Image (tube, rainbow over all chains, first blue to last red; front, side):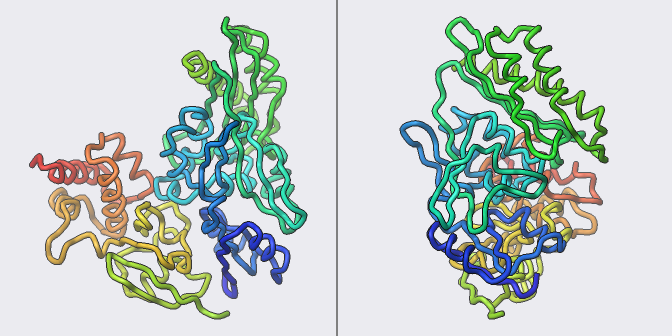
Length: 289
Length: 159
């Protein structure tokens, strides 16, 4: 980490300028809980750290007319304390809040969790299920991209040179909507997902599912948006048959690795079970709203 | 590479130091300010031995750059006791023998202090989850939990 430059710009424009003009490799830092570990371990090389925590757009949660804008560097502790986001999108919040310890929660952000590019990122499936979008700023201005289009492979994103993630947008919810995130780990805390599942769904007055999005984490090179899982729910009352079909669709979508946390067979099976459980939680929440 | 000049409030007092970008807050506390109470365990945010409170938030000092704390408030283990008067957490850690080798203790006390500020009446489960980012290889945790519970009770005026 020697010979490292540091800047903490106060505007989005300045960040883009630094990213496009820096000599060598500039890395954007939000909470730093992944970045600093990787730099120290030598897994990542950088010549400049661009700390984006002093930019208000990246640090604030804003209620808009049609949803919430959440700064990419908002920490887990800050998001967890925001009542309105918790009420509208509990699944998104519980995903981010599962990451690491209390100490990590003081720093770790949704933006960092996404851009770090881990297939097992707990903050990501909930956002994909929520239909969240990213505001990306770069030399050519800004663009809006769905969360599921950001990570292209482990550790790699679709962001182009000079671009960085400013904020997320979470839309308002129709009535009778609910979401949930569940992950499976062999212990109770402080671990990396063997499987993660985010589910968001909407019911009509009679309790029929009219809309659903299901996302799986840790079972493929990137978090997946699984259309077949949604199709298994939409048009049903989310009865036993629908849940069985959802489970099967989730397991079929898996393309996991074998590692110390779980074998391919195990992850594939757990994905089906967890998708069902997360759907049941989202359903309970939807019925209450 | 030029060093950064950092001014911060540490345990209530203004402090300043010079540091390189690569120096973490933990490096700066220990090597530049001689505040060696915060310990280096893993240097990757897993063990909590370097826990400090940064602008009111519990963080690992090994995952914060020294240069980042410019203009901010940092509370470390050195600021927990008031002169010779031990904090209830320190007192009960001693009374309950909630430490053996002691390396993890400053982190546990700072983390528990942050917990009790936010939640003066934590359940055992809440204490265990809050302290899940602090590792202790000696005690088996039970004595630590008891010490935190007793300190919490004392701070609530119950003992």
